[in-house]
Image 1 (cartoon, rainbow, N blue to C red):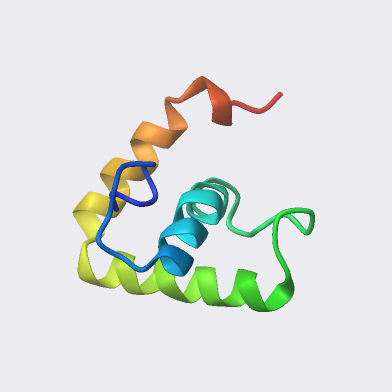
Image 2: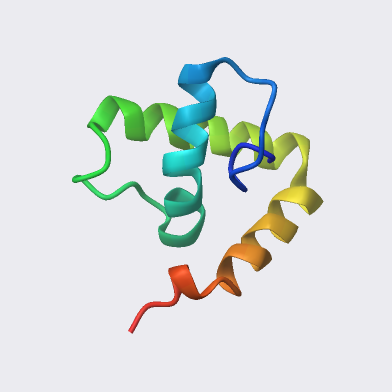
Length: 76
């Protein structure tokens, strides 16, 4: 969850970068915009997000709520 929130995390650089860049988009939109990732990256990121949700559902929901309250992710 730290990577998704932009904090330092213990994952290797590839997964850490992926979660920092794509995690919030997938959490808020349910998918990765085409301009941000390839289909394979989107599929892998969604799988990782699903695994995180299975293992840490309350932390995932808390992070989702923090993102929803972040003006950067306000649409309209």
